[in-house]
Length: 305
Image 1 (cartoon, rainbow, N blue to C red):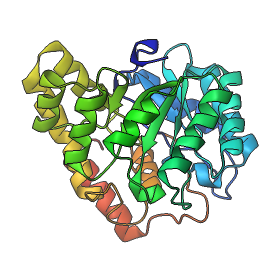
Image 2: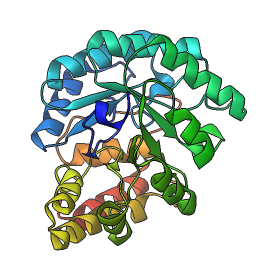
Image 3: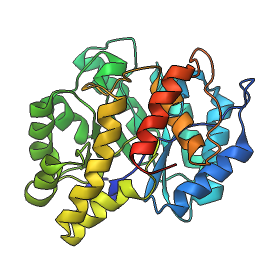
């Protein structure tokens, strides 16, 4: 497999997982949320990613989310399954569940908290790739894993049989661009910012798009990339500026939330739009009234209320 084995392009968000107020998985709300995302013309979604609170999901719940997503929107959207785990055996079980559900691929970080060595990271991904033959996107997430996959290591990972894409969420922008140049002909490369720099990269260097979070702006997110692809750069700049409002108001340079937690921010914002995103699950806490006001102010600024 390589970049030509898949057609992933544009904005593919890691979406929120709806829970009831008492913490139960809300599959009815999940179906409604998926339909809303499809109606907003998202090209794809990532299920059970960081925004989807994978860390508080049971193995059965994650598999349920995969199955329902495939049934609800698998014929309309690319659906990727988040398979983050502390061991290769656990990641393999999630990958097999994604494959059984009929998902289009999986997203996988190095084991979080462990801070593995280069050899351990290679062995982790190789074990998963050799065991489950499903397209795999390597996710570089230094904030969550404690390791930053440099270009040399990403090139080695790109040689694994099932690796078709990289989501590079490093705060080291120089390293991000270096990785794009080195990998653009081997894998699909995500993390392109929705601004003038992103337009320059897409039109002159390469890259596929952005695996973002939440899709609070709905169609505006993917339409930035569609506008660039169509050569309508002024429209792309307008749409990108809207996305930058969210990134600057709610998130820092390392993609961490400026207040509360990212999952609660996204869920509250989607709820304000009428999408049943539900509640966060412990250990996460809901936003305080003051934090909710900050989210509401941004949504008002963007004319989304």
